[in-house]
Length: 264
Length: 293
Image 1 (cartoon, rainbow over the protein chains, first blue to last red):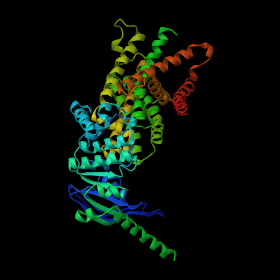
Image 2 (cartoon, rainbow over the protein chains, first blue to last red):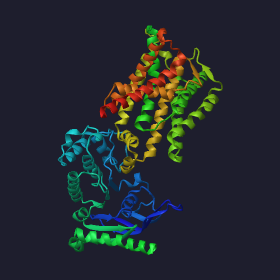
Image 3 (cartoon, chains in turn purple, blue):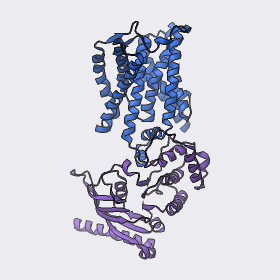
Image 4 (cartoon, each protein chain N blue to C red):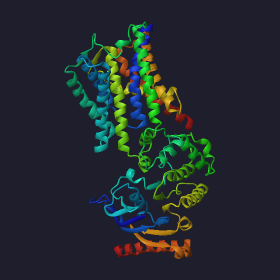
């Protein structure tokens, strides 16, 4: 489904600020897998997701989705295969447009946008039903502007938007990090339900070790642009949050050792 | 104010309603501050006037003016999208270039249209006074454009254009190729302004190379007055508001000029407009900061 081969992303190449965010990543994700991605700040988690979405081309290496080399395709062309929910609840929808208009934008993802009415009766009925299933009472507010909603409500709608049109991959970029604990829990539950319902191949970046183990079928840890842990199946189900934190510390500790060497 | 002066103001307001609608497309829908209009308005006037003098059918001449305006919009969009020149600067470049181009098109600074048949000529002498024929004709044309825009912006394509201006990152993530919509929107916007220029030339009987100065501010005035008076989330109401804003603005100016006591002269118009737009921009902010306090 997704195959990443030798993916390297270097920012500000050839300047004193040069930074290698991803350093030769190899990763294969099968259809239906749900991969949670963890790692410290600057490990390259979000860069990996952005590279898959097409925000910037690979410095070297290749990205295949559905066997198609999408590495050089701009975001808009890739979007027929890739659905995405951002960390910032304001980033994933248009505040000045209504809820139903935002949903209509998402429903047309991957198809040609012509001169047919965007809010067709059939579409609105689907929107109504999908909003009702959220249980947030939003089905009665379809013509309200998106800006009137809370961050959690917008994230919930962003998840619905990601599933209105077919896609091969769902990318979740710390999509619960900006929410209050109650709403984060709700969106986490919704994520589990939607991914199972639509059997979506999913990559989720998270800061929460708990969430990384609770959700998904496989966990990958990044450190300094490389994959340092990749567990699934029985081995993963035996893992506890404490184990993950210990591994996390060990990676950080290596840095400390290196630093000490430098200083010494 | 006499009836003739009043309907004269309405007529001018209706001509500039097209500018208002065009500016609404660029400023509000695309979030693209576009000064090209100061050049595309006289461009539309110049193309229409020269074509009319050359014996071209008035409707065809008007269509040519729309096409010319659209091309000017495309140039600005190209500079911005393809080369990443700041939108404001890109539009100023096009505007400045158009001054020379307009002079080339006309061959002189002013082309009079005396006794020339225009698109309005066939509607005279059907029992309606001449000073009423023009506003009625223009009102029908404005109504058609407002209906067309309201329909367009509610289509999948139009909605994608609105998303391009409101949140380009989200738009791209939803598969919207934003450059396509910036090109289309800028062509549409300046096409409307070119139409306004062509209508201005035909209702006033001349095209002048300096006629474009301040077009953007007049367009913005229409948008802001309209938005302030017609608060609605329904798009067609806002579009009607822009038209009403353009007319009200002209009537207000006409009123101000007709009171000798104020001592305003026609040459004070630009200052008055700038003050009006500045006030309209400042007032909502003041209201907001007071509400927050």
